[in-house]
Image 1 (cartoon, helix red, strand yellow):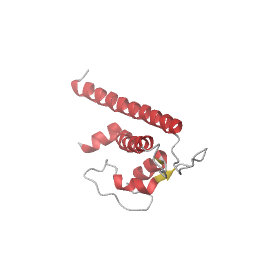
Image 2 (spheres, rainbow, N blue to C red):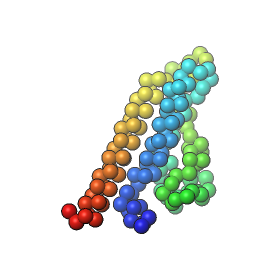
Image 3 (cartoon, rainbow, N blue to C red):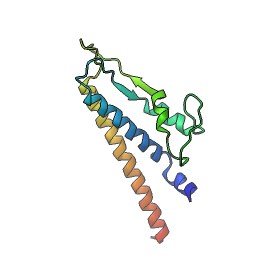
Image 4 (cartoon, rainbow, N blue to C red):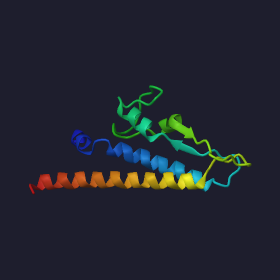
Length: 133
């Protein structure tokens, strides 16, 4: 049964996990906007997702250990963590630029919403097929 859902849902479950992790990181950046020497962080979503989908290995070649083959091991994310270079340096060493973080957070939220709608649509189609509609 797990294989059916893997084929039905495609890449969207992995994308949701990554988008949730990125949302946490971006919200942490916004929370620490006034913290001296805080470095803004982000995830390179595309490269992490590609590395997760290719043989379920991360960029260091470490095999993931999870309870389900579709899960993304969150411990691999620090290897793909990036630090943002600010467009305007701050005197206190903080690299968070609130307008950029808000824009990235909103873009990530929209992508998350699209992924959930696509998954919902696939399940609705699957249920209709089972009912013979």
